[in-house]
Every structure is written in structure tokens, then in C-alpha cells.
Amino acid sequence: MYGWREFVDEGGLMSYGANLPELYRQSARLVDRILKGAKPGDLPFELPTRYELIVNLKAAKAIGLSMSNSFLVLADEVIE
Image (cartoon, rainbow, N blue to C red; front, side, top):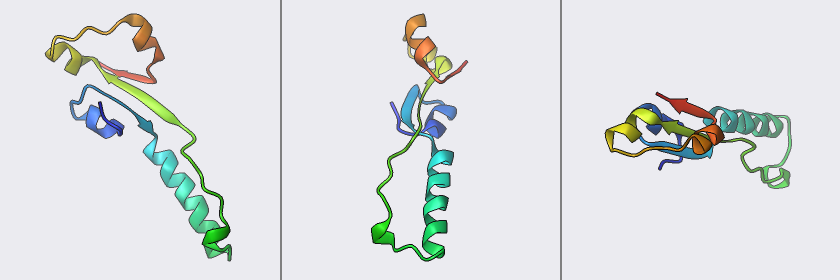
């Protein structure tokens, strides 16, 4: 189980975590506000807005793990 989907893309079993491109966009919005004169201490604390569940079926089969269809339906992406 990983926190970033890149590990699953490289052969990990599954990940559940924030979407990195969305985190970068959130960061860019905050940097833009700071560059326009906002004080960093006055900016609100923001949590990630999107989380993803990614499952790698190829890795699951390699370790002899079967995944139920009801679990796979919950996944945002299934890598075969």
C-alpha cells in the first residue's frame, strides 16, 4: 500500500492518496496569491481536494491475491 500512484505504476499493489498534479495546482494558487501581496500567515490551510484509489491487478496476481469486483468498482483506476 502506497500513498502515491507512481509506485503502483512501477509495480506496487495499490495506493490511496492525494492526486499529485492537483496538489501542485493548489500550491501554484497559493504562490500566486503570495506574489500578489498576500501574507503567507493569512492564507487558509488547505487539505487535498481529491484522493485516488489505484489498484494494480498484475501485481495482485503475481503475489496470488484475488480482488473482489465490489472492491475494484471503488477504485479510481485499475491497472491490468
